[in-house]
Length: 461
Image (cartoon, rainbow, N blue to C red; front, side, top):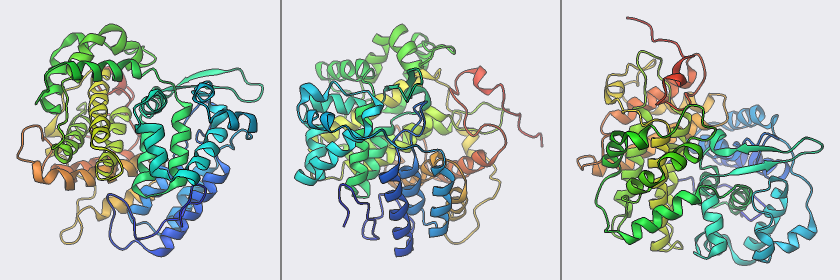
């Protein structure tokens, strides 16, 4: 049985999207490596503040049906870069029970183990659903502090005698705490949920300067029926917003959008609203829009690459299909989660100079290894990405794309759903081909010409 300190996967719950034929042996191996990671590693793998992706990677390739030997191989590939957490401070652990003390330790990575043990204890006493509701969805000051930190932040790193370094996690990653929470909820693993809550507590809350005003602006206005895709078009057409981020901004949302065009950002993003009877369709629309601008952000004649920041919008999207199915999350909180995600996707799009999505790049793409006729057309893609050695970003992208194809299919004829039919499989091929290709795995900030300078031109046919 899975507990707040024990990972135990079973074939009775293999995720929002999975391939058939997952074995007990794979479940056992995935549980084994996740347990070792949980017991021995910090949620940040270096003093530079980069995230430990082992849980994400392992659960994704497990759901995609890889063998136990591949799970072990990928774990061995990634564990060498991990580090242990700082020792538990029992005095801090005791103080975390009072919010006036709890908030003093937020945003400081050296307290990871203290937060982890605190949330494990809370889960053991109350159950993981009650703890997530209390500390993320309750709507009071403490829960809103945590919910904001689920979306982005910054950590003050200090290790040994090293000078403290301020590391911007919006620059090195995006949405990691809510992705981690999504995995824990999707696979019903309280230990992973405790990790996610502790991870969120390490992050800063600057993104709240965008999310909270956008929420208030939306609540004070007339509910909008605009699709995310149409709002992307409006953002791209507004040159003040679409050019607000500069290439040399350390953080293109915080130092670009929120400095040079905050009112415009709130104007457009607050128009994304979700009605109580729209959860499934709006979740699908959010997935479709994120895939539309992520897959379409190409720069011909440069080689096909996916934007690192946009990719996180896609990779996180699968979990919102899971969130809205949870009976213990209130309808109000499901709406709030989804609206915040849609607004984050819109501001992220603007922050990379709002490149026009090029659908022809998707429709006319020629895969390196076309899907064979008969059988699962995704099968070869799943096999290749499962064996691809990275930190799990590629496999999460492919799984999210395959899931998107399923949940968007009923709505493809509706306005706002610009990715449809065979384009999903095309994107799957683009994803695996691009990460196997030469050069950097991802392009960073795809709307800037500077981002593409080191990439090769495509071969001329």
